[in-house]
Length: 135
Length: 135
DNA sequence: TTCCTAGTTTATAATAATTCTAAAGTGAAA
DNA sequence: TTTCACTTTAGAATTATTATAAACTAGGAA
Image (cartoon, rainbow over all chains, first blue to last red; front, side):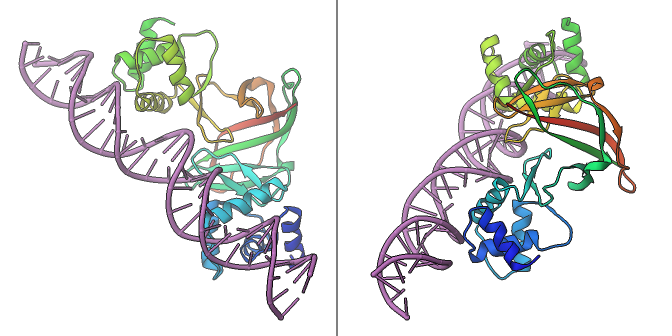
C-alpha cells in the first residue's frame, strides 16, 4: 500500500496526518494480511517497530476514528479487552479460548439457510457468527 | 420451580444454601420465562424484590458459580458489562443496540447450511449467532 | 519565512466493571 | 453448644477505557 493510500485512510477518517497517526496507519494497513489486535497489543507492536512514542490515549483516539470511518471493525470477544480487525469485509470468526486468538472465516464459508424475522419495527443490521474452539 | 430444585441448583454449583444465595437462585430460576441480566441489574432487581441485602461481591461470586456449573450462560455483547442468560439451552440472540436489549432466538430458527472446518487440532465447541438490529 | 490557531499529543486523573482482601458472621457436623 | 470451614461484607485494588488540561505542532495567512 502506497503512502498516499495511507494518507487517504487518515483523511477519510477526519484525521490530520501527524507523525503518530501515520505510523499507526502504516502499521495497520501497509501489510499483506489483515490482523486482529487490541489497543494494548498494538501499542507493544508499535514500540518494537518504530522509534516513535505513543500515548495510549493517542492510540485509542486514532483507532476509534478509523473504526468510525469504517476502516476497522470491532469484534466481540468474551473478556475484558476490545479487539479490532483490519478486515472490514463481511466475515466471521473462530475464537480459540486457550490462546485468546481470533481467526477469520471467509463470509462464503458460512451459509445460513434459515433466519428468524426481526422483532417488530426492527431490521437486521448484520449477522455475526462466532465459533468457539476447543482442543 | 420447587424449593428443593432451587436448593439443587445451589448444591450442584458447590454452594451452601445461605440466605443470599437462596434469594438469588429463587429470583433467577423460579420463573416462567428465562431472563437476561447483568450483575448490576440483578442487584437492583433483588433490592426491589427482597428485603435481604447483597454485597456486589456476593452476587458476582454466586453468578460465577452458577455459570461454572452450567446453570447460566455468559453472552457476548459489545460494551462494558457482562450479560448473563438463564436460558442455557443452545440458542442465539438478537441485540438491539439502541435499547441495549437482548432477545432470544430459538436454536431451530437458525439453520446453518455450510460451516468451515476447524483449524488443525481444534474442534468446534459451539456456534454463536449474534444478529445486530437497527430501526 | 514567521505567526497564529485549531487541532494533537501527552501524562495524569477520573471512571466503571470486576476482583481481591481481611475481618466479622454463620451453617451444620460433632 | 462448640467449632471451624465456608460466607458475606465493605472497602481497597485492579484493569480497561475515557476525560482533562497543559504543552506541542501542522499548515495556512500575513
